[in-house]
Image (cartoon, rainbow over all chains, first blue to last red; front, side, top):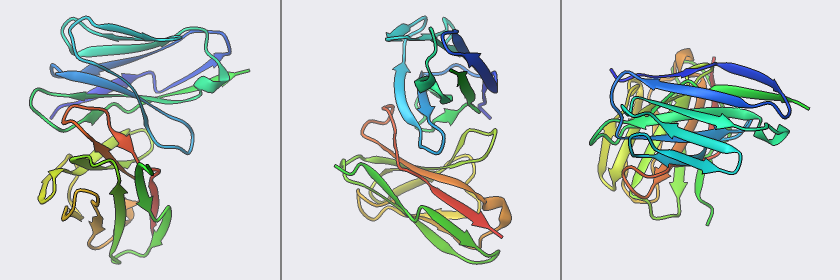
Length: 111
Length: 112
């Protein structure tokens, strides 16, 4: 079945350092979403990417969707302690409602 | 708007017991889903609904039932609880089929 792999599993950075998480699918995706989950909380939607090669920015966060629509990345510039949490990618295949989540990358930030 | 609400927040069951996890949304969303979250495995789709009266299976449906009699409510029933069903359960809703999902606060279930 469709799988979405996400790496790394954990990342521990010093405040001010950059952070990147990568998402890879075994099949072509129609779109990909990114969510953030704070410790003890629920996933919160960050962004959706639809087009091949798409790049979107939200302040210090940059999201990319690969040309083949099989991979995606989230890059955070100059991390802050408020960035702590687990970041999930989630993808859909064409015409499918089902959202397949990656296993998540847990970000810890040392102040 | 309360968004997506879930009850209870915590529940402990003994093996073989049954129970219903409640989920409600007040955003008039057609689409609703149930996920379970286990350490290191992300969120896995259990069942989903594309409108009142319509439900379908996700990745891990065994041991769970759902129904959707109204747009607002989407309860998840555990028929005979097993320790493997110890998890955190999230309900989510979305307005459009491919749209962002709004998650409830979750129910932490332990089966002993």
